[in-house]
Image (cartoon, rainbow, N blue to C red; front, side, top):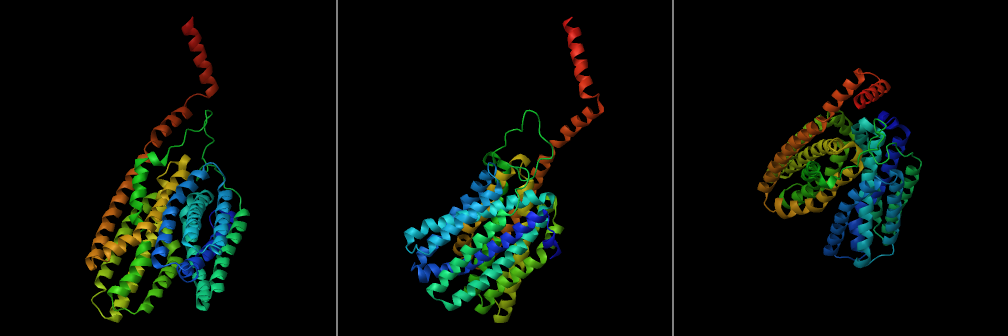
Length: 444
């Protein structure tokens, strides 16, 4: 609570955290009710609902790079307000769109705006918090999880009533959250460093700043983003893998499934700040990637062993798996955030972070399919293979990140040497006068 009252970034960061809490509360309401709304109110079948959500997830992939690119040209605060207002409009359209053809563009724009808003929040936070971005990220995740939990509780009230008007009231509650979030964002100030994630340290050269590199041509950074996709699989394991594995392959009672969310939410709120402090800085964040792989492998091992026991042992094993995958999530949240910033060139971090944000969206699209079509189809051996692959890829990501950090730090040494030599030499005006005199004697 003390950190929330005085977060890195001061007043603007505190207001932004409140806006995120309000936004995630509304998102939690809709996430808990969306499938049932499309089924019982809109009258869609399971295939149409799956296709609708799948297309929306794919559209979300484009939201991150578009937001990052736009943030280099326009103020982040205005763009974020625009994303909230876009989602306000699309949620309103849900009340009048009932066919699959009309719902498809509405859901697509909603997912696009949601992913873009999350990227812009990341850019705003990194500018405002600066070098304390890991602490801000921990606070942000704690606030977001609390908001999701409150939203799910509100949705439970509406789902308990179960009428069409109750479902529509939940949509209006989500729309109201966007209005409140946009109002709160409007009260913040635009962080310094337009076009950058962190304000420039010096004033630049007289010839102007060099042209910003493109993340799409940076193979090293694209490798990081590609490897970061499997580093986000904990999300699908928690939300898809654990419930389906419990229902189809263990004797644990179905009542254990809601406990997965409880374990995850409580641990994130309690431990996120501690984990972020432990893994603060780019090199420690790279080390956290290795711990992520081991935590995910341990979770997969427990899931593979959960099929052979009775109801009690299976329930304990599934709860242990929920705990382990949450620990993996805590490691991933630190490493992905810090490395995405640290591995990007300072003068182009907005566009680079936009590309980095694609990894979460891609995982949300392909992760559930990977688990249901490959991992769980293969049985316990599938979980063991996933754990081994996750551990191996985490080690590759760790080594590649450390190598890139060393490469980014290497050019700084020659520039520092030249600067120190210039500091020890004569003043600039005397050097110019001496060079002109030498040139005159040479011409004579």
